[in-house]
Structure formats: structure tokens, C-alpha cells
Image (cartoon, rainbow, N blue to C red; front, side):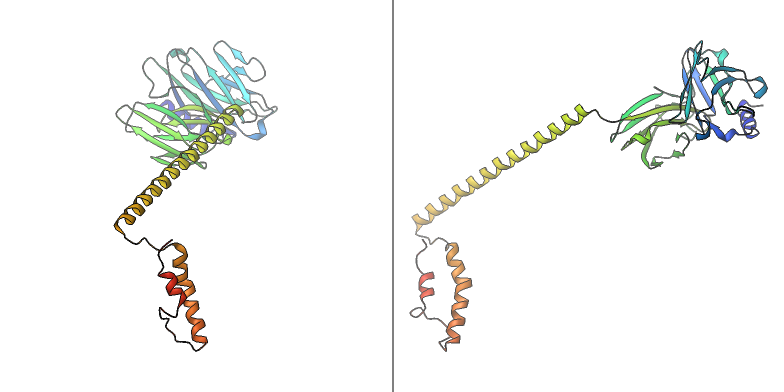
Length: 320
């Protein structure tokens, strides 16, 4: 029977299998290392967790435990109750390490709960791999993960442990904008998560429809010194823009003033009348209508003759 099918049948018939979750099938290159995350329910925060090798409950003796021993040879275990995840790291893997393994939680007086997975070790390149399993990003920024694959026909997905999966070019994963780009020539699909927040810290995995490879993303806050430096730089840029605006405005006004001076000199030489000053325009369009109303109300002629209207004489005076 196919090992993957056997694994699925085992999990389907395992009591409490949903209490612990992990990846299903991971392939690692010989001589390499891998970290396997095991997510558990909040109920098991204070329980002992362990990592065992075997195909069922009766033949799965613990290798490492979160109480003792936490390290045995090239295998170590670490529990993170805040994230409800315990991780198992296996180093210097060989083909003899390929087998079924299980993430388990010890329950006193009852059957332990856990979930099995298949670990394959190959001398060649794995069907699915990443450059590194631990990636760090800064809050408000973005982070990218490159997932290398072998089968270009398989469906590519990006999943969050304890959450959902995303396939296609772009979308949202638990409220976070995610972009997936598949480079079929180089057989790598890149995942970019934007607008990171501290709550995005956790375990994710690349999925090709058959195998998975876990990736831990840690989101950190920028240091106070970095933030201060950014504020200083932004402040200097604002001051620079203000200075440039003032200089440009001054140059434009100076150029306009010089142009007006040249026009006035030219007008004086050619005896051309200059435009009336602003106060004459105000007299023509504001005071004159008011004057007409006053004259009409006093039964004076509605039109103002040159000889009888002081405003007209004033407006026809040479510009000052």
C-alpha cells in the first residue's frame, strides 16, 4: 500500500487526532535538517509533549520529550505554550531516518493524542523545499518565501498552521494580503505577505498538493533607534521640500517683477498707456454703479456726462 494512503487511513481512525495537527509528508535531502511544528489545543498547554517513531500506538516509543530528555543525539524538542506549538528538530538526516513519526501529547489515565506524518530522506533534491525554514519580518513591512518544487503540474498552495490555505496568484490569508508568483521555468513559487503585524507570527507551509515544507515567520517591531532615525530623515526631507518651494517661489516672483519692469519701460518709451491701477478698477466697477444709484434717487440724469461726473474725470486721469 502507498505510504501516504496508509498514513491517511491511520489518521482517520485515530481517536483525538484533531487535537494535534502537523504537516502530512515532508522530504529532506540527505545530510540536511528539518524542523517539524506540532500545533495542539489550548487544553494541552501544561501537558507533556513527545516525539516518537513508529506506525501505531503500540510501536511508537518516545525519542524526545518536553520534560526529559529534550535532546537525544541529533533530535531535539521545544515547547512554546504561548503559540500552542511544540517543535521537533532533526539534524544530519540519513536515509535510515525515513519513517513514520508522530507528534503526541501525553494524557494521564487516558490514551495519548497525536498526529502522524511521513518523513522521507532522499539523496537527490527534494520534491519540495525552501531556502530556510525561519524567516523574520518587520511590522508594517513585507516578507517573501521561495518554495522550490519538482512537479510543475501540481497545485501550489500557501497555508497557515491552524488556519486556511491560499492558491492562485493573490488573495487574503486570515486577513493578510498574500501574493503568489509561480516561476515554472525555474520551478519556484514565491509567496509575499504584505503589511505584517505581530499577530502574523507563526508557522506556515508550502504545499504542492502532496508534500509540505514548514516555514516559521517571526514578525518583530522596529527598534526605537530605527524609528527615531526614520522620523529624523522624514523631518529633514520636509524641511528640504519647504526650502526648495520657497526658492522656486522667490525666483518666479523675481522673474515676474523684472518682466513687469521691462514692460513698463517699453510702454513709457512708446507712449502706450499702462493698464489702470487696481484702485481705478474698483472705482469703475464698484463706486460708479453706486454713484449712478445715488444720482437716480435724487432725480438727476441717469447717465453721467464727462463735465458733470467727477468719477469719470478721475478714471480718465493718467495712471499713477
